[in-house]
Length: 357
Image 1: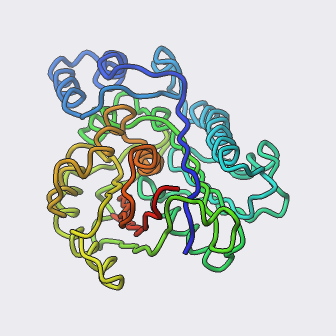
Image 2: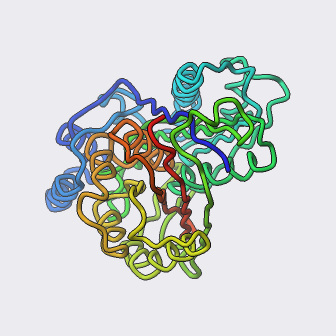
Image 3: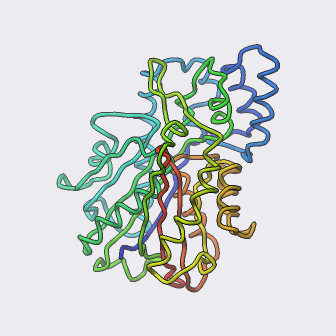
């Protein structure tokens, strides 16, 4: 097994009520079209989002029309947030950068070479032989997939420590003049943030005191769904691909996928004490709840995360996990953490509570 020691989100300092974001962003998308403006207002009001943190001051977005400029902001601000989250996770655990053996970095809202994980090495004082894996393209599923892949690594390196770092600055992908339904919906729900998760192997000195053990994971790629979620990358930057059919995919497949994750461990969905679900939006959350026949209280942290910070893409499920760890914990039992991303793909992670640590 591997062990989750700390999970720390980091959010930009600019935070706005949803209505204020709507007032600034809507004209950038639909111009003076009053009918489309009413649609934007309805979508934003029904999004389940109350506030969002943004990478830039709200007044900066009308002038943000260059992909190159937006990506420069991503590299600068993303690196700062990644450092903030990572340093807090290490400090809380009593470690330094020299103690990190493996670093997995993920994002889907900007790109750089060298990647942000390389830029973190001098900032965090990481060793020059730290094993790095940068990931692009997993999208919203990457927080869960990252935990699973770090777990896989630590299975083979049980005395080591690893950082998973996710950064998503979704607001920097705003597409001026795009009044497609996909862009209008995404403008209502996505927010900006970062998170760092510190995990260790079985033989590491911090393993015993950690609150959660990672037990197993399952990866799923659903056929014939490639056109339902992702990016179209063009001259204007990253243009959202988002289909309303995504929630139907979840309703059709998720229960069986959870069963396949749990069966080898003699568990059923009713045995799971804690559900940590990516805050993909009201339709996605409702689809998960319906597919798994969960009580309304089971996803309270997910809905709380959506309301307070929006959908943070790969960071979202880590934000929900951090909130769950900060809440009163069960004395024992199992957790299932799950998220969805382009493909359409799903990643499910089985964890075990280790009591009050």
